[in-house]
Length: 329
Ligand SMILES: *[C@@H]1O[C@H](CO)[C@@H](O)[C@H](O)[C@H]1NC(C)=O
Ligand SMILES: *[C@@H]1O[C@H](CO)[C@@H](O)[C@H](O)[C@H]1NC(C)=O
Image 1 (cartoon, helix red, strand yellow):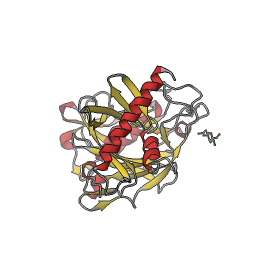
Image 2 (cartoon, protein in one colour):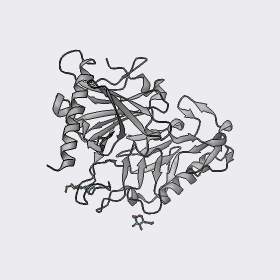
Image 3 (cartoon, rainbow, N blue to C red):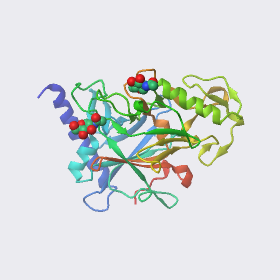
Image 4 (cartoon, rainbow, N blue to C red):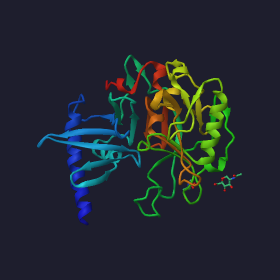
């Protein structure tokens, strides 16, 4: 074994021991059905961190949550190592190979839930039966710089077929939304990208459509990296954030549409500006649409690797709860 794989193996064992001790206090019986880790947004970097503590000795471990293949990038003294936690936990605890992600926008903790647990949120909201589903797609060509070209991509892709603003389809080049033979194009989810990144022509089309639907709201000078900003004091507010038109990611059918409300589409920027939170990814990015962390906040996302599907809730704010209110029953 190469020294690096030895390191990975021993650190993985240590982590599993951590999880064993972490869940024994959570579970009713000897065999837990789920492991829940808190996830916090790091204000300085915009990254989502999870942490756990080793018992003897007391060593805190902080990991950046990276959806690249359901793995966690673990930062420890010896450098970076990759763990496919859903797979390892499934093997250890006989869990289903799935996890649910619920990120918060504030410093209050959200969660990542491995295994089977009801998606119960205070006050009395159970999302387990009300998710919409869309297939998780396999991109046959790696999109990560680190693995060999022949590897399949370990990132999570979904089949966005159209984008709507205020219920109206945005005219765009649909072939950019498909994954091509070289693994280019398509739509992936990334917790590492703070904001949603769109290929240039898609970015322009979405921004233009949004601007047309919000002609009555006073604009202010754009604040980088955003292109379309408003005077925040002139934008109304709703339960689901700033009162702006919805943006919809239409999936395999009109009914399976991920509806994005103001809390997830708009970003408060300096000088009181409120900006449409999409970033121009350039003319030839590897992936046409990268759904970033901000768009996922206070949405429950279930990555079911066994059934190759993504379950999504849209905004929990609609149901008067947040990702901070998850409670393990
Ligand atoms: C990936 O390969 C599988 C099997 O060869 C094929 O069925 C699937 O359509 C391919 N996916 C894409 C996006 O090309
Ligand atoms: C649409 O995108 C595809 C893939 O990038 C490109 O080959 C094609 O020329 C584009 N079509 C138009 C009309 O721009």
